[in-house]
Length: 229
Image (cartoon, rainbow, N blue to C red; front, side, top):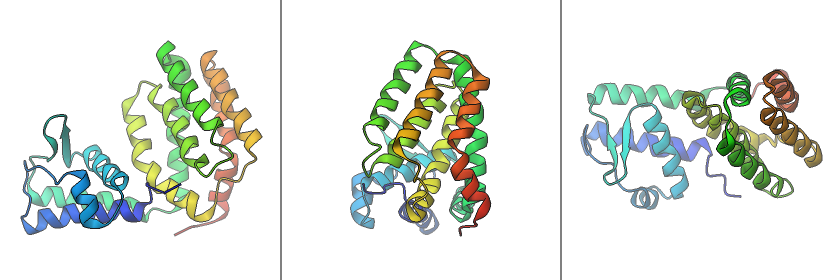
């Protein structure tokens, strides 16, 4: 797969936006260049630009409107540049820190999901799980695995948790691909995923959390043993 979430390309797009603000080429309230144009200008895929825009929106730096595109927030340029600088620091976080935050968020997400899920949520998670199952023997395995976990987070009915996971996922994925983290046999991953969903459907948050922690044991152990920078 093309690793569209690699932080280097996403950071380049975000840094370009900061440069546009710093030079005065765009100002608060202005619309950002279209995804296609920016991708061509920077020589990156549109998926990188889209991910960068999502990060910028999460931090309140831009807002996306269906008919108007992506617009810079009405803050001072100094505030916007400071927010962007803080956001880019995420790319300097080490693997261990990112994994710890991922576990904290996902534990709360799966507990809430088991308590709050509805029929639509279950259908969403089943579809994501089927997609993941079909990709376990392909080079899209990690991407589809995270998509399933994101479906669980969305079904927690806490949009902040889902958004925070979405923000850190590109940085976590960049380490996964770089260091080939995900090497658990496919049949074990498949079974753990299905057990997680079974406990969610049965509304057993304790069991769901227990299975999630078991599922993440390998990556947590690696994060504790090594420091990646």
